[in-house]
Length: 491
Image 1: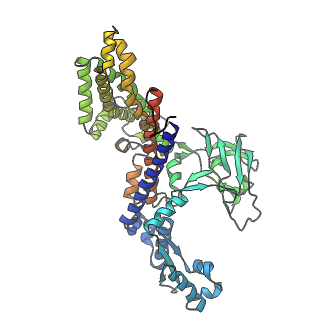
Image 2 (image 1 turned 60 degrees about the horizontal axis):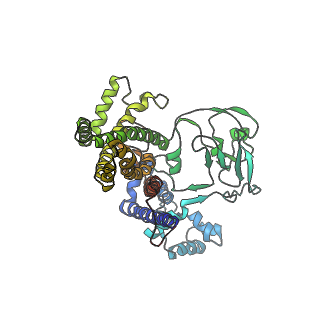
Image 3 (image 1 turned 45 degrees about the horizontal axis):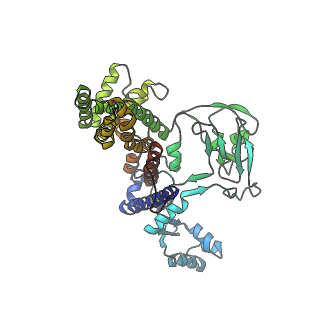
């Protein structure tokens, strides 16, 4: 069993690596780079050398190439920096030639004829760079600030503004490495982070993971105590504070060190949490209704209840999802429920009722169908005939034997259903203007936000792959007779 699970995990990691690498190759080779800048309004207003430099720096930021201006070229390779900056000097020509020999493309700005160099990454380089920077471990040597040479570098146990112990760091990017609070799962960390690059052009310059995980809505202030001892209401989330090279007057009023670059509190959950809330609750509703309904249909095959269930399944499956959404939404408005989520917002329970009911209805037909089918298949098995011969009642046979075996395939799909709630529901979220994850991948594709596409592809693929493994493991818990063994694995 242990060998099998380890083997499955390794194969899952390899599958994820191959899939993401293929997506990287497709995005960076099949989509023209120039398309990425089409949605950048600031770029459209630029002219001349400013536009050229901005374009190349943007491509570098997004991982397409490595760009070096003349000052960078001279700083990296010149023996005489001042002479290198002057056009056509021996040092200038030598440095430019060295970059050219290393495979860089050399071009010149129109104003001043200053040289610059860039190297476009090949597909293997693109893939290698993505995986090299993916896992970012925050250490006491992460910050290198020449203006703060005496920066102390260490991990230590301290207390946060709530007077709760936390693992803290000086010299790391984040001050708080492991801390408690701020919602489920109540233990949070900044020590190991996934770096997929920055979002562009939407939320330009912000890490894609921050875009996904950042709360929404309006800023709110909470009473808190800052390191300087001042107590006041503030929207600052001290647990998110990063190193800031230069402090302004407001920073110095609150903080005793350079960890003053902080995110803020908002009154609404992130897109991930929003989609997950809708998904989980609707899934619970679907299972609570669909499983008993499917069992009842199987036990009363051909009777009125079974026929009504079959009609419901066929109608919901045959009806286009969008038509069902608008139909149920129209009914909801008759009972005073909003037809758009933002009308009442996150704080009103009425905002959630209709979307959750719709998502539950859309999930129920497949659950009812499979439960009914599995139970009918099991009812014709030999062990059922033997149980009848022993004189067991139909109720006992269904509850003790048929249900136990028929539910196993359903149990296998539960982890995937639960985990993939994070991906959101595109049509439902669009129809109700719910700020969740459902629209994020299509929007990222439409906006040419390549780093966001890579981020979401990685997350959704990883969740799907490992959900299948969890489903297999859960089957062994429900029915110990099922063994997940690799060839030659007897443990």
